Image 1 (cartoon, one colour):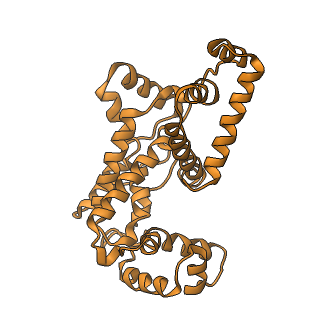
Image 2 (cartoon, rainbow, N blue to C red):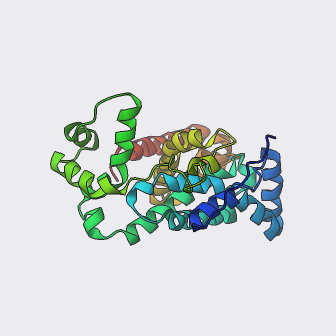
Length: 281
């Protein structure tokens, strides 16, 4: 453990909140697991509180990604905290997944909803292309900058599959709403916002990038599950996605068919799932 950073004198609510959140200790995997089990089994409110407070800095880090949308960061953080609490409430400690891996999508969801409700239609835009731009333009600009590629409206429009003039218009809307993580917290203190939001675990950025595709896949698979009925739904739940899947022989016995017929039924569902994931539903 390094020397704990002394806190500057803070008057702004966001500055004060960041400083306070940074004081809660991070949890080891075992500590988190024990607390999660206490809440999962016994509804231990103190355990839930520790799970939430230990992850507050991660909510701040995620909220900063949406700083360019011009809304108050403290409001984005608070919405993200609601998502974090929702995640803690439904988190299953027996799934061998860290809480932040599971919670990041709840956090993002609540922040997205807040942005949509509080940005005027003039700022967001009403077309599908405008909404896509609203959430993805800065992400694409950052990606190009990472590889030292000169950005142009045409290049951004091609990457986002929208019209070039729409890129130009959205850039104008968002141009004056930048907020730097390197901005100093106060006039006299040289500490920056990011100093108090440091990812001490070194894993959050990795989580945010690696789990996004997995999360989207899970959503699609849930939609596919909802499209199934009867025997197909039973096989999908008990054979394909179960933590303790039934054997083909058990499926055959259950439905009164041969093991080979059970395999054929399973393969048909797998093929349907593949088509569903590749298609537009």
